[in-house]
Image (cartoon, rainbow, N blue to C red; front, side, top):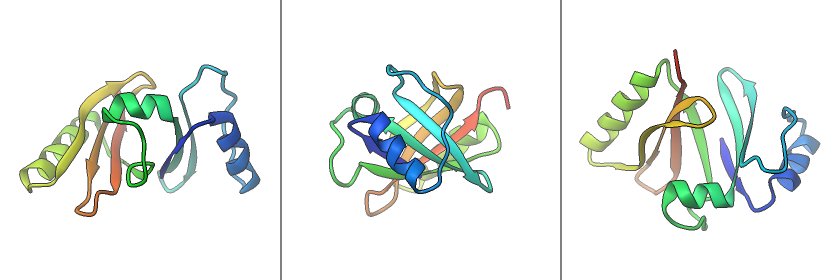
Length: 122
């Protein structure tokens, strides 16, 4: 699951109240994440970074997403291609993210964002 935060530290503090634990991060970080079990991740991204990735400011409908970890960077490309071939939207084409993952974002028919990712080098 992914959420967008105007204030990353404030959001992390909130999610820690719910029992999530995050690694230490600096004031200039734009992305933090934690494992929630079974390969699921809770990721919090800055609104500024998401505006760059999406090409538009975050707004209702693209503020939250969930993430699916795939087996390899190649599978991120394959799944994003399959989504596009079926006539659905690939919001962000696969790319190598600075946090060490092959990443893409797709949208379901209702516009909910789903992030596809795999660690680089896998």
